Image (cartoon, rainbow, N blue to C red; front, top):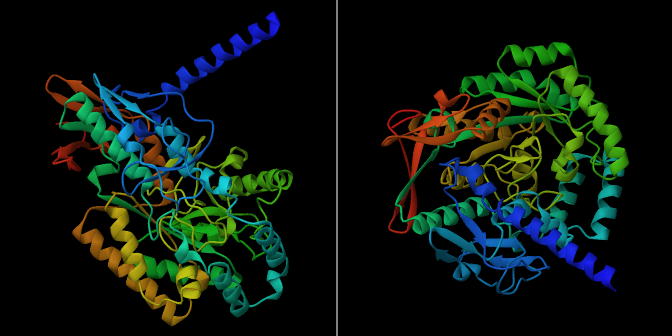
Length: 475
């Protein structure tokens, strides 16, 4: 009996030590977003977190998923949700919270809420396996009808929010405003999100799915160049088409880039862990042979918890909101984020195939709506346009309309157009930068700090407003 009591006490001490360590990490994701002065965020938990996960609110329009210290957590986001914002406590410079922000943010970014809801039924899993087994025997017309059927309920899904979900940004902004109130300050210096003060970032990608798409790559590069855009081409290494070193060299010599797209595009990369690990070794080998730093899974199937087997700097397989994709979910952010050592560059806009063949649209209206929402958060405009689906004149003209619209935006606003590998390099450098004070001024320290711009987050009548300093790095 005494031994059991001792073991129980030891386990309690261990749990409290873990809890204390966890509390020290409460602000990690918010710190990573802003890279502001050290120890500015002073966040603590009000009480012990619940044992159960669920949905609740943090303000009227911000839905969270995870554990909390107060209120009730619901199993579905469509329910009437408890608003935890009323349980925030401001005391002596500290912000007492009813939840762990880092946990909540990672539950969204890693789509843990989707896994908990088991958003894919057994029937859908079986249907998916049968579909990809029979897919080589079908034509585009049949595939379109199947995909429309799969996406038939997309308008009924309230979370993530279509057409762009910025829950992660909303949580961070609320916490920054509240922390400013707790500290009694009206402005906070931080490292601006993009180099040279860019208002947002544009990354164009072209996933090559068929031999016809491969043969159209040179023409598509001509189109991109005519609008001043460079893109990364996602190459399928096996089975789909022959990949020549001449094509890869042509792409790079023209200022474009190459990333690995899956292994054979059969939709089964993540079906089984053992098979995934076998394929991952081959994918990694192709990455080295092609000199590719980035990866994207076919059809945007994904399991971030397996990414440690991939030897790539960045991944581009997680959509912002995935109501219309075969695998539902979404990371609910328009900014890059780390999954272990891999940087995730989320797909923040609708794919051309989905636009043309599932929604049946031949305009850029959806893209324009998404662009406005993403740039409203100074985010990453990440596009997938397949060479395979812009061969015909009607779809190619839509893509050219998009490029024309993006060119106008770049002329009016300072948007950084970059290859995904360049975004990866910048975000990794920024993740190690920090703001330090010198007398009455601030400056940014870290590698590539000469490209960084100091910014100020200001509380203007209860709203968060960003302002850039006059000169990069210092004020």
